[in-house]
Each structure stands twice: as structure tokens, then as C-alpha cells.
Length: 639
Image (cartoon, rainbow, N blue to C red; front, side, top):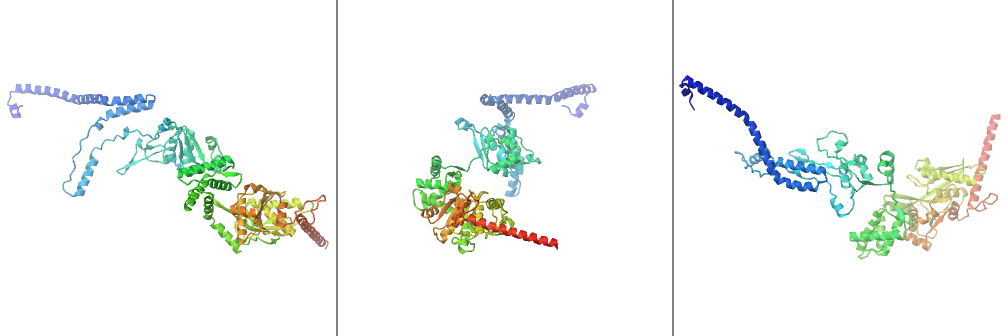
């Protein structure tokens, strides 16, 4: 090394020689410096290859073991190879990391120290995350298949769109939302894949986008996870799009028949997707086999819920109540929820009584307590009748007035309500006026029943002459709507009484519909109607004259309360099963109905004879008035 002043003192020739040497050396140095990046790159590649070769010795044997296990699945093999390459590429993440020294702030208090520490943590390189190597097992039915328990059977009680087809969840970090494949959650369709999925149709239809997602999935035969915003075509955040999952399952929809019919009518794909319809009856035959099934159900419930054992009398009372709920002595209800509730409550009353076994008395107490909690309105109505606010007569006899019976339904509780029906007749044009219909309080079925009365009168009493009467029928003290045809025979009895002038016993009540030929037809709620009138008569005192007329075809439906059965057995209360209007009018009036003789006349002293005579008088008066009106018209023309 020479200083510049020393270099200047050298001879000129030597200086030129040194300059040429320096220029040559500079060129060689530039060539070397140009090669350094290449050499460094080659060094890094060789070090990386060496690093990968060393790491592969620690990784390959574990990956190879899993590849051998999953050699039948090309997708899994591809995934394992990708995991191996990523582990080798990210080897630094697996090496021990040096702990950064604590950061202290110059000056300031504790708050400054905390802020400085948080800033240092945020600035530091985040710790490596191995979430990408986790396996998100969304659904695992392997144990069920291995144990031989069969295909999965899944019931989804909250069928929202995410709960059905799955969803992608999010995590919040420093105010930002992020997700990865570990946050993909399967739905009920995934859990039931290869088996059966049971859904409540009403709940599915109540959830937005749920029905469309279900039918679209069934049509495509694959499960595609998507957000509700994507399903609606709305813009949303960037998220994962999991691959569709092939689907092979059976979907069972449970619901009322009305829902089935509505879906079949309004959804063109419904019948194609749900081809098998199973309409279950709410009743079953009452025989030894069904009684045994009831007993087994009660025994299973008692064992599972730790209830007291129930004896044979208790089981028999439960079966009787099942027939009562089915409204048929030869049927049993299949609504097991109600039966189970009665057994539970009977167990409670048995405990209150200190009994170790539930008997029929405890079951009866449970039934009565259940009714007592719901009969506030019935008690109020019966109180109005007992106080005379609502007039219902239970003794003497009255022309053109009769006791009808209706049923009121309040959720699970129904009861009978007596009503006073009256009829008035006069000369007219052959019409029967339903006052309820005239004031828009009559339903279509009730109006139909009243129109049948006109047809009955015309066919029986107006074959050779016009029907010249006007009759009005009304439910007295009725302030609500009236529907159903179960009072049509009752109204016909009142009409026949008004026409014949023969009084009807007010100690009797009537229910039943009637056809144009005078046959009394079956109705619903026979038990409640009989018990409703019985309660009124019992409150006033049973005389042995009170009773109810029901259609003969309803006799098999009778499952009455024990007190009603006891009163009927002792003759304090009577139940008549009638097949025709003539049988009924004889019981109600105590007068024979009368049958046509060979000359087309009814016998003297019969109800039909009195009705025919009254109608004939109406006809004669109508014809006389018609002739008088015609004569007056001719006189006016002559004048």
C-alpha cells in the first residue's frame, strides 16, 4: 500500500506499470463480484437440498406408513404428499425458537411498560401455527359401521339452513374475521349420509331458505356448503368454498296430512323427491293385542322414569281413557304423548296418597285433575244456566221448543253445551227460515242441514199439494257462530212439534243429523254432549225422566264418565239410540209418529196426522187467499 504522495514520487515508468496492474486486477475483481450472487444462490440451493435430505429422513417413514394405510384412496395419498412437502419446506417452524428479551420503556409508569410490551409482541414474528396440519373430521360414522349398529338415523330438531347443509365459522383476531378449513362444520345431511334423516316438515318450512336448500341438495345428490347470503345472491365476504360431498340418504318428513297436500299442490318437485307417503291413523283397533301394547308402554315408561308400578286396574283405566280419546269404544288413540302424561300424573297422585302402587283411582284422579285445570269456561256456562241467565228447561213440555246439544273445543279440552232451539210456523211460501243464516252466524254445514228440513217436509207432506208454510228456526241466546249439521234432527223435531201442536218433553235433549228420508245420522262429540246435559240435570236433581237422544250409529262411540254410566244403570238418566225421526218424535212427545195406510193417510192421534192436517189447512188458506186475490184483480180489470 502506498500513499498518494509516495505513489507520485515513483518514476513514470513504474507508475504506468502499477496503473496497468491495478486496472487488470480491477477487471478480475469485477468478474469475481459478478459471480458472487450466483455462487450464493447455488450455496442456498445446495444447503436447502441438504436440509430437505436430512429432514426427509425424519418425515418420510411416518408419511410412508400412512400412505400404505390409505393406498386405496388417491385423494388421501395426494394430500399426504402435499403435507410432506410442506413440512420439509417449513422446517424452520419446527426448530426451537429463541425467546425475545422483555421490552422495557425508558421512563413512564406501568401503563407505558404494558404498551411497550404489546407493541413488541405485535412487531415480533408470530409463532408458527400448525393448524394447517390438523385434520378436520366433520363427520365420523366409523364406530357405528364397525360395531354393526347399522346406518345412521339422525333427527334434526332445529332444521335451519346451516344446521342442515353445514357452515363455515369464523374467528376474530385483533378486530378482523378469519377462517380456515378447521372451521368447516358439517350439518345434519352430512351426519345422516348413508342412512336416514328425519325432519319435522312444519319446522323446515318455518326456517328461511331451509326448504329450498333441502330440495336443491336432494336434486343434486350432493351437499354443497354455502352461506345464506350466497344462497340469496347477495354480496358477502371472501370465504372458503368446500367441495360438494356426494350424498346417498333417505329423508323422512313428519307432519300433518294438510302440509303434505299443500306441498304436493304448490311445489312441483315435492312429489318427485318424496314419492312414498305413509298416512298414519290417529286410532287403532281395541283388542287384546293393542291392550297388551298399552300395558307394555306403561311398564316401559315406569321403568325408564322410575315411576311406581301400576296394577291391572290402573292399566285398564288407562286403556278406557285411550278409547275415550279415540271417541270410539272399539278404538284406542295412538297419541301416546297424552297417555304418557296421564300415567306420570297418576304416579304423582299415588305418591301424594302414600301408595306404593298406582291404581285405577289414581289414574281417575289424574284425568279429573287434568279436566279441572281446563274447565273454567264450562263451569261459567253451567253457572249461567243454573242461575237462569241462560234458559235451558229440563222439565215440563213445550210446543216448538227443544234442547239441542253442541260441543265446544278448547285446545285439548272439549265439553258439551245445551242450547234451547225454538221454532215458529205460519202460512207462507214453503220456506224454512234459518235466523242464524239470515244474520250471517250460520256456517255452511248448518245451513245445509236446515235446507234438508224443507226437502223432508216436501217429500213427506207435500206430494199432492204445495207446501204453504213459513217456519223460522233459531238457537235462543246464541251470540256466536253456529256450524255443523248435528242439530238438524233437533231442529226437525222442533218443526214437527210446532206444526202438530204437540209439546216436546224438555227433560230430553237431542243430537244427530238427518237426511232427506228422515234417517238419523251419526255425529261427533257424543260423549261430551251427553255429559254436558247430564251435568245440568244433576245440578237440578235427577228425576229419572231426563235423558239424551243420540243416533243409533253413535252407540259404539259411547265412553261416558263413571257417574253418567251409574245414573243410566239405575235409571236416573236415560240414553236413547234412535234410527229415524219417527222413533225420536215418539220418545220426545209420547205420541205415536204414525205410518201411512193404504189410502195415503196417517192414523188419527199420530204426530204425522197432526202435521199433515196443519199443512193441509195452510194449503187451503193459501188457495183461498189466491182465489180472493184473483177475483179482486178481475174486478179491477172490469171496472
